[in-house]
Amino acid sequence: MKYITFTIPCYNSQDYMKRCIDSLLPGGDDVEIIIVDDGSTDATGEIADYYEKQYPGIVKAVHKENGGHGSGVNTGLQLAAGVYFKVVDSDDWLDEAAYEKLLGRIRGFCVKKETRLIGEIPDMLVCNYVYDHLDEGTSRVMRYRNIFPIEEMCDWNDIGRFHASQYLIMHALIFRTEVLRRTGVVLPEHTFYVDNIFAYQPLPYVNHIYYMNVDLYHYYIGREDQSVNEKVLMSRIDQQILVTEIVSKCVDLKEVKEIYPKLAEYMCRNISIMMAISSIHLLLINSQEAYSKRKQLWKGIKEENTRLYYRLKYTTLSGLTYLPGRLGGMVTMSGYRAAKKIYQFQ
Image 1 (cartoon, rainbow, N blue to C red):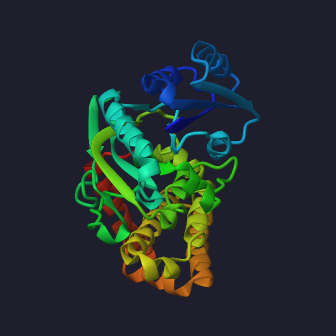
Image 2 (tube, rainbow, N blue to C red; image 1 turned 180 degrees about the vertical axis):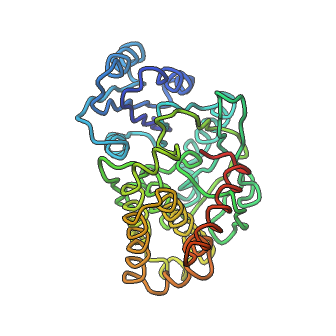
């Protein structure tokens, strides 16, 4: 039995992918590592083949035409044999001690599967992640101990309140493969920022959650070509807008609220954050076209879901990024710069 399938989408990752793969190998035969070579033009494919040859039955190299990060995730999910599924970006890595503890806990759940109700096995595991600014020698751990009970099964009605800097991102989450497939989540190709969809759309299908207070995932921050780099994000703003629109439409929050009101509140907050990011970077572009796109983004939300529009505009963070006039824009940018300095994001 493969307890976890790790998928590593790779595009021209030769300079750093070995660190990522090596951090996953301690799982041995209990895991499978799918390296998806997404049409790379450097030595990525050769490195993937080397690991497959060295670790047969553990590492699988998949070569495909370039389709973007989402396409790599889709491919991994289609092929996954593990009980659980996790995406690890090729420039990131897992902490060995935390990884060992996580895998031990999953082994325990799976061994007991025959003697327990299937619903008592976690649909989603949550672990801490670390923002690693390696070039600056600094890091910041993002934890969830104020939200989830530690190492206890819970559901969305048991959660606490998220702090301003807290939200569930792909790096913190491990989904049961069966649950992910049930959601029907398919990420768009040739599009950045699709991890926002992956960390959002499946949540209403999750009924049992298990949080481990371990610093598992190391999220590298600092490459000039990184998708979260401010200048890069500005150049890809149309893709950010597309993902924001998909997230805002893919789940009926009214239905979610009937079962899990706290989850519905979080998911609305998540849309608010994405709207804020899109609005802020359109302000940073500071062109007439950008201002028109900002207006159209909000108009689209209003036409699709009037109730959500008014909540986003008047009761959540995103409303502060859609203040009228030049003064409103200045207030928005001042708040953004302050938050960037405090939370050390790109």
